[in-house]
Length: 396
Image (tube, rainbow, N blue to C red; front, top):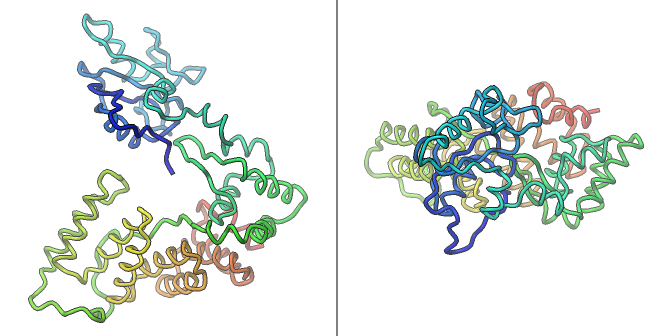
């Protein structure tokens, strides 16, 4: 889910503007901010120069953990100083903008992120907090809950965020009740596992619609030699001429380089995977990664067909089985998801994510005893994993 953005035909409040961002944005990510500027008629740049017309200062400040320039840092109040002479507390981009503004004819408008949000129609964090409930505020109110507890309740479909920004996750009023119930259960000494079971049981009807696992699909990063007998899928004619394997693999490498998580390059990556498959329709790595792109767009039918095709060609790619399991889970077909995760683990017993998602599936099917070995396996295989604390609680 993304921050809301204006979608008004003919509205171009940034027409002719060359916008630069500095500091970490609170309301949306840099990539989304650049796309928003382009949609509203402007352009963006990474550096401040004589052509820059606007500099936006991120509300989250500066520092190594932010998306800002490496040398930027906030002042004591957390807001970058705009006063000349405060060099040690001012970002390089801001200093450059002030230097240019000191020259005759220069007009770089320096604005806060909140001003940028109002200008572009994006809800500011303060406005969101008045309408919804931020995760950090909920954690401050309900002390027995941790962040990973709330994220797990999201994965199980018990609660559903209405919005995620670059700085926080927001929930609507109906989610307060299960969050409060979870906090009360933990405060009274109940295990988180039993709390989750109770919440799932009380909301079983809603879960038939609200079961997205939000799992990241497994991606094939490099080609490998064929390890299983390749077969032609039923009903498909065998190619008559020879297959240019080298050309197909070159297209795959091009696609893989584009498939780096940048949404602006995702369509180009998909096109390159398709070119690889035009040359070699049996290149399973390209089939799986193309399916992942469809999955990321919530095109489940297309993704499912491609994962099934990959398995029908070469059945020993654990990635295809794992990703197909995610789709079955999303569709509420838990028994089939369980079978896919189990097959992925048969092929690769050291794949921590498959243990985690299989454990989640067992829990949702009411089979906690079957889930425990996989919670333990996840702890062993991913001791620094994002779900390790939860895995520890569920395995006890």
